[in-house]
Image 1 (cartoon, rainbow, N blue to C red):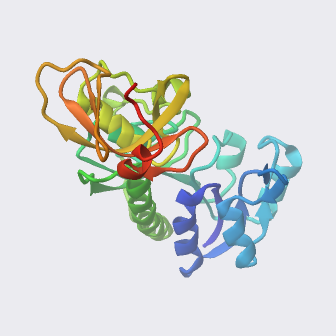
Image 2: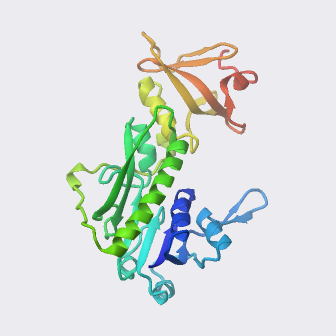
Image 3: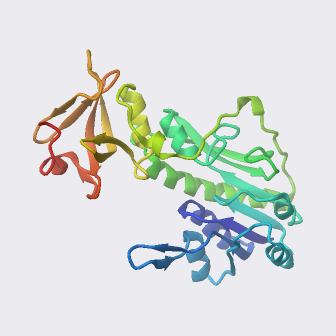
Length: 301
């Protein structure tokens, strides 16, 4: 089949690679805009664009998805299918172009965790399993009929970084399988149960701030869900301290925010129980393990 792939970040690359190495033809890639980064304002490409250029796949980077020239350009490829992985919300005049429709890969077991940050919220909420879903695109975001779902366990030591990578690899397999069954035409779509839906909104700075009045388990899960990026944080004497890794400790009669420090360890009391801090970062500094961090920083007056 002739496929146009739409995606931008690292999460999408394994799916693109798997399709490229399959029997199907990637006629073009649609991805986000180039960005200027660093002091020298060096131009950097999206991970999807980098893969496409290395493999001589045409790249489209529209400013506006509803631009008539862009829509006509898509039609000129006479695509059989659009595959969407971590891209923008497509208008109906685009996702209805291919003869066999358009599907999206989503990082949750829909209808659970509809929205921009499903992997993060599964961790923040302490889920023990999650998964990926492919579904046919409809006008309302993340509501289309389900094609395939695959589950994955969330391990105790998983954080956003590790779970993201596992799910992107699982997603690649599901994308290839989804394309195969669409080509065969032997599949039944499953309607989503809207009454079971939950939301996974975009991660904001406010969400990232630690409230030590919460239980140690809640804060531990928040830290896991935001590590390594963007990082859960708290303020100490007008300095932002990000925490990336913690260990749960049982602790009675805690005083939320109370800090216990030795030369090699750091424990912060929470609304219930305490957390041992294992990896952290001072604003403007590099990420360190706790022993290295405490050589140059003290929380005790």
